[in-house]
Length: 308
Ligand code: ADP
Ligand code: MG
Image 1 (cartoon, rainbow, N blue to C red):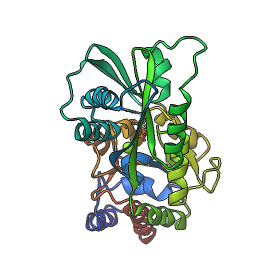
Image 2 (cartoon, protein in one colour):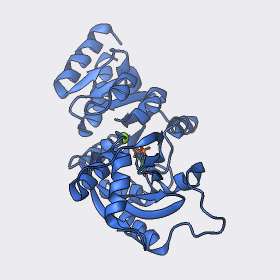
Image 3 (cartoon, rainbow, N blue to C red):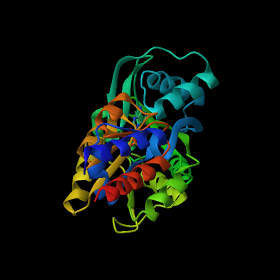
Image 4 (cartoon, rainbow, N blue to C red):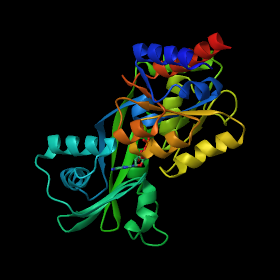
């Protein structure tokens, strides 16, 4: 490829709302056959709102919201913001947190009003946080039912526990971007395989996948859903697809996507996302519009075809 033709491609990219790190990026773009999409903030808006509040028997809803809201107020995760905002709206000013700790991909813990509080995936309860008695049920039936119902509707449900006992379930709703289904149809039209990658629960991931036209089967030609993937496992997921002989583009927005964006053959960062993602990516989709990912791939193919 001649430098001039590549520069033309780069200029056209800017018009479309794509920032390209260097002209050589177009070369790897052309070979891409698989597009891995982060869910939260990429396929969905990432702007979540508190939707379900279910307290365990013997727990007051106001206390559940006060303790969980206070803890989440110290976190910047989209789930945390929704819970902190929703709790403050319902119960007023939130108390202070001590010994705050973020457990990446699982949730948060800290001390609020003298209680050791956890908010996050159920795995966090067994990850050395809460000391559940041996043989005790995973979650009381009321909470397990609330969680399943929320997840079946595509909402992200987290468990709240303190002093070793599950106390409630909170679920947040995140809207799928209006443009996502069309974006995925465009990627498919280019012959690309879309794969949804998320740390979120499988039921939520599959509900989102179905809504946007990603297959919920295995990683075959029709697409795939990779759920409950911890932030540090996202890189391994990209490497596994590459080991299958695929040339992988990764689209993401979060701090937890940065390493996977760097590991992919082509990293596309949402311009609406974090600085860490933008720095790690080869391309930035300035307006955070996933349809532009397909434009970028089409543009690079066309640019390089003209040169040949
Ligand atoms: P994604 O890959 O979808 O961007 P993350 O890896 O950031 O998601 O988080 C995965 C899951 O971990 C979330 O869906 C949520 O269940 C849980 N989680 C992470 N951080 C928090 C938090 N601060 N509060 C509650 N739950 C959290
Ligand atoms: Mg994300």
